[in-house]
Length: 174
Image (cartoon, rainbow, N blue to C red):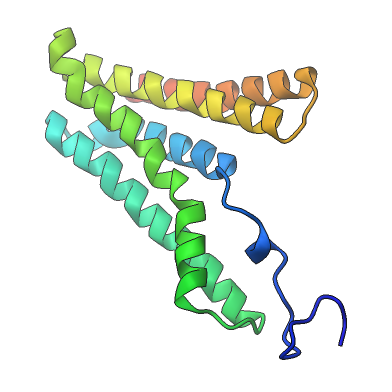
């Protein structure tokens, strides 16, 4: 038996023994997803605030479920057994995708208090999504031990990605 085997002889995933931690990649991905939803929501017509909030949250949930399924199915394909604890672990690890939709949805919810029309609401939600994307990328780099220069680079790269989405929204005329 090797040191990477369990008493049953099955390989043990090193990732399973790690403590739970924030999934910065999922948070960045979820923020990009939320920004994309907001940027393109107007292409199908004007969405009332409640519909935009639901679109953000449902899209986050669907992509979260897809990520959980892909991870679990991928482990099954390579011969690892899957149990409920593993599904819960993966679901928890990927939850940041859903969480990233919540702040832009909250921005939509409070937009009437700021007296924003639907176009202003969409721009507010998009700004929040891009800002959190840049923040999560930068914080993730710092927590991973990146140099200050690398962390700034991560932030700038994510700002550029966010600005591409902003440009797409502007080009669509929303």
